[in-house]
Image (cartoon, rainbow, N blue to C red; front, top):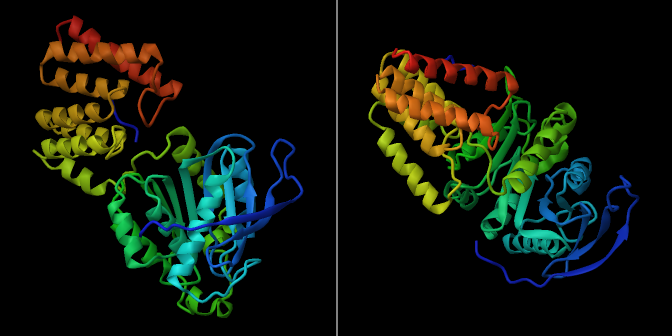
Length: 411
């Protein structure tokens, strides 16, 4: 065995006023359009639409309580340049929007629906391939509510430094196949934001959810809630979109997340080991592979492309069994991983290697030859997690060694 390197739907009428042209930020893209979006009660919301200049998915971005839509400007331009049509909007009573900040559930829902309907009404926007992002308590509430109102259309969710109400948390629990990115920093100036975010993450059930947790030795001291009186707390660059300045890697991460979940594999993201911890723990227990297999089959009935765990994580578990001489358990795990990732040359080779250890030469040869054929065809990556030239060469050598042992009659 080679070593493993390790809500209810709202019927709303929305009228959209003419949009004024801003200066273009890129000659290859249309200029962002700034203008009015009228909500159901007549309140005028101000929005900026960043067109990708071609048909494609859309992203709707809400802001946190102590910021406005302009906090998204740089990221929105990057998304448009990546082929994603993006709308940022000032919430009621914020920025250039009308109305008051007083929370009234029906009005906030209407505003969310109005913004969503405006986005999907734009020429070229794929109305059923939409991403939503929100920072802070207000932004997270708006983003989760949008996703819950349009579960068939929202294919990706980004939640930063905030929390939502219990119905929203339960929606995340039920949305077992929604890609969700959670972002939070220990230095967030509004504790207990970290604990609220981690609870939402823990309660969510999608194996495609991912957590970005900027950790420090000690969390920030509690001073005041963002939604109570934000003016009492100095900004530290650790809350919501303020993180873009203190963590310059974050905008690129968000762009890549939306590109992956809206363009490359709409509605799908790679399964994450932390999100899949429960099922990986189950898989690590002897005799549990059959139960995990049934869970995969049931998930595939709902979504033929569903993945419940990362391929490499099951590789690690199976390799651990094999090193300890637990060949039967290793074979069960590798068989299951091949079922989940049938185009992986790596998964075929792992199973061939285990069969060779078990003395089942015909099966070892069958899977080794299939692994080599997949490797030679270049129709799919080596595996879901690695396709470098160096690792392809390593696996090729391993397959050839296995076939040579079989030819020489060795185990």
